[in-house]
Length: 140
Image 1 (cartoon, rainbow, N blue to C red):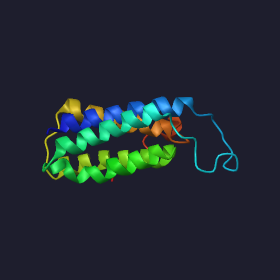
Image 2: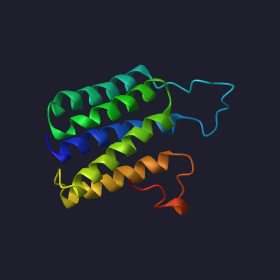
Image 3: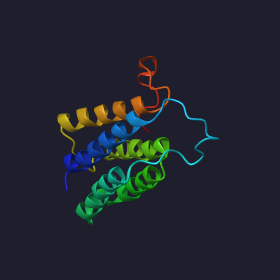
Image 4: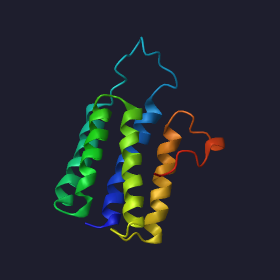
């Protein structure tokens, strides 16, 4: 498994989160929907397939330690908790960057660019994902 394979997984999940977030109303009182608005079953299945495909591919590789974060994101997504599903993916990106700094993995310039793009996409989904906050909350 290569860094680009991990980024393919992250990219797929980011895409699914963006699609889900686009369907949510801007503001929903928690008293109306205390557990969140759950995604459609098809969206959950697609998210789940992506996560389990990664688990199967990561095997005994160095990327195996990311499995728990992907599962955490999946569980939050299944429960309709958008924000809680984003945080583990940001942590995956943080771990990848740390692994690169520690020279555990090699990331091409294209991989580094993708990490930045995925981080930016996730930050845009978060509340307050405004351009004036660009650069806030980056990395470890």
